[in-house]
Image 1 (cartoon, rainbow over the protein chains, first blue to last red):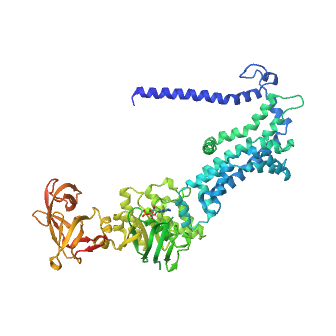
Image 2: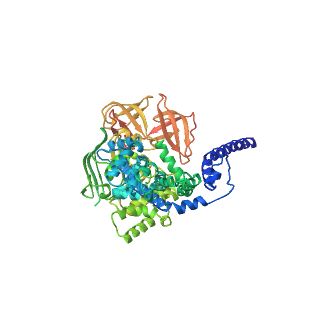
Image 3: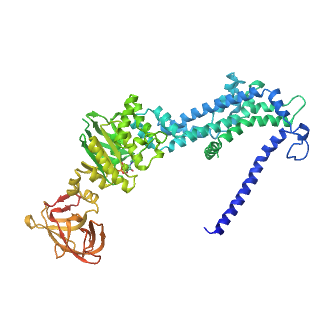
Length: 280
Length: 356
Ligand SMILES: Nc1ncnc2c1ncn2[C@@H]1O[C@H](COP(=O)(O)OP(=O)(O)O)[C@@H](O)[C@H]1O
Ligand SMILES: [Mg+2]
């Protein structure tokens, strides 16, 4: 490589970096704006200029959100329901994906088409049915009521099926020669060979469940049963809306997800790519 | 007793017959090689014995026990896969122990078997590694180890050397031969490589087009091929084939080649047009005129021997084997002498008739 080409490569690299930074800033700005605003006194928030840093830095709103609301209960509700959704969704999808990929049974193809088709139906369309169903079952305002309708994630089944499809059939045959039961093939070979997928899918499912708003909003009317996403809409009082207060609650709500992103960055990206490939 | 007997087994894939009424007996302790070109059904036949493919018709007996309906793990055979199929997330030890744990063998006994296998294959130091941390040759050993720990009635190998580089392939071949001599177990080995078949087998089963072409010891198959297919498939460089007209009877029998050369031979065949087969080593380069002569086109010096590629007058191509210090050069006209006891005639059906 001559020095000239080296310089050209650097040039292109430079432009790419600048572009990436600009786009990243555009993306991150609302987030920054939210956090900064939540640290301003209410009168500064409503000033008609863009002020990138508070004149007076205050943690008052956070204090309010933490002490004057039921945020503890909301966190708990969110954690329990999100974990519940994650564990049940991933476990059932795993079995379904495995069965569709590896087992031959009557009705397999029809089942597969049904799952693909259900994937075309947005959950919102079903939400009234869900509501009526949950109401009939007396599950409104309960964890089970929040969890059950959220267990429909055909995309997870599809991703699992695809991954199991890609495992060379040699392994299955080697396991057959090794006297492994179907159960052992799944738990000792297929799942451990695809740990990455399970982790990634668990993380995205958890994030979806944590961020879910519409259903938990409908399913719960009692303040103490709300999840955090629903709860933050409750941070107002008789005197109207307080932007900074709401934003501080929103920041608190997003915090665990942000933490998850940071901790599992690579896995999350991988998972999003996995499901995006299908979800489009 | 661990004889394996296939009786008139048949297998089709969606209407296409892949194995057609094959019968075969493998004796206890025997090393049998299934040899044939790609797509000839070797793997399918092996997998039918292993239980990885169903047997449409016919019976399979392993160690005196009817086995065609038994699950793969129940047949007392172990298989070494072409791509090894080692479980990537398990250590070498766990890979070997997996099958034994599944039949709830005693922990101590499993460890003992693993240790024994590791000693036989000289891989004690590798037991705690994962497959990704092993070289191709080492993975191969683990795959064999996984079979050894089962102490099966028979080992089944499907092209086990095809993923190794040339040098390692030769070494592993010798090690496999050693392993067979030490363990004295029944082994069935699938390959398309005739050198592997010749060097390893007690008996070779040559498959072609869903059928067995010939079963015999390596030398039988080499010296007395049953058909033109076998004659062409076994041996490297391959047998020469020439057009020949057989005439005369008894001591007068003679075959006339395309270039007019007349070669006397003794064979139990009526006069007619045949194809004459002769291996390169049965054609001797002589200083003085002999059976026929041709023009050398290419001379390949391999050190210990020399392959002389020739054109006869009528355009027939031929390879003769000369000594390492051959003086033949491209363009030379060379005289050739045929060893008439090593001639084969093939009729229209491809059946072989060997000269006496
Ligand atoms: N699972 C299968 N489905 C359909 N055809 C198959 C299958 N397995 C093998 N075949 C066909 O059977 C023939 C023999 O295959 P195989 O036993 O693998 O040959 P070999 O091992 O001698 O190369 C081939 O024509 C192959 O295409
Ligand atoms: Mg094969």
